[in-house]
Amino acid sequence: MLDISFHQAAGLHSFTPQSELRVVAVASQDNAGTGLETLWQICASLQRLGYPVVVLDGTAQETDEYPGLLHLLQQAPWNEGVSLNMGAMASSLAVIPAAKGLQRIGREASRNETAPLHALVPYFRTYGLVVLHAPAATLGSLLTHTATIPLVVMGGGSAGVLTTYKSLKQIAVDTGLPCMVAALLRSASVAERRKTQHALQTLQDCAERHLGGPVRTTTIATQSPQDLQRLALQLLENAGTISESLTALPPCNMTEMQAHFVRSH
Image 1: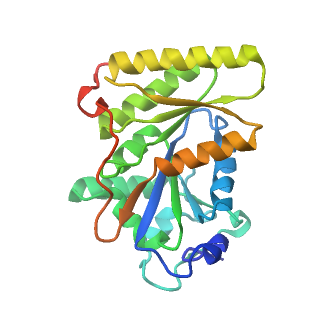
Image 2: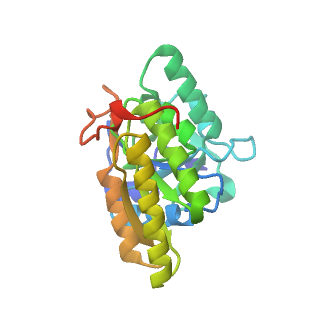
Image 3: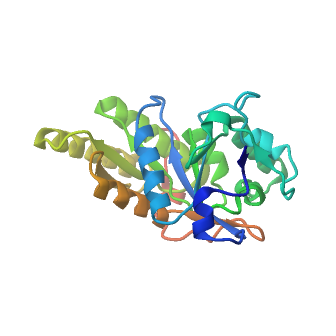
């Protein structure tokens, strides 16, 4: 059994459940392999920094065999016995299937005009950090009351630029939030670095033209522990906060994208 009210690293981090949760958002791509290994490496870095991490994976469907967020939401959150039988999935990093549960949270928040992520606090209050990994359309419906700046991992080539731009636009339309884009360097060659910088510049130009503001970008060498830790720290800086009494910290450091994106692109 994976007790949802406790995590291996939580014992080192804090013995007292927290009334606030820090929330990181990572947009998934159609190509499931794009950035997924990097996401796990980032989460491992965050845990080494002392943050007990739980990943709500919005690309994985909950089932009776692999229960997840939807099953948790069907239980009373304050029961001490709330737990998931994760079987072989239980590990030092808690990764919970959450596609149906996140969709449910988004629908209920829209219907009740409440902050979506507020519903997560009772279930994950012993964790230091919740990582939402989901398609941009799902994140857009969840981040409406937060100051979280989502991360979009850009794939290679022109297809990667286009897919990333679509994610930026989706989140901007739904929330007005800017995003950070990370391009992954698989090798240290000058040619690949030059090609990646050109792709990022193309993305920047599109964002400024059609979304009304610049996009913060970075390049990450996937074989560099220093780069991965740097990205982990950037995600912490971009994390929003949800609490039991309120939904999030007021938005800060927002760009003019909130009022200046173009919906037709």
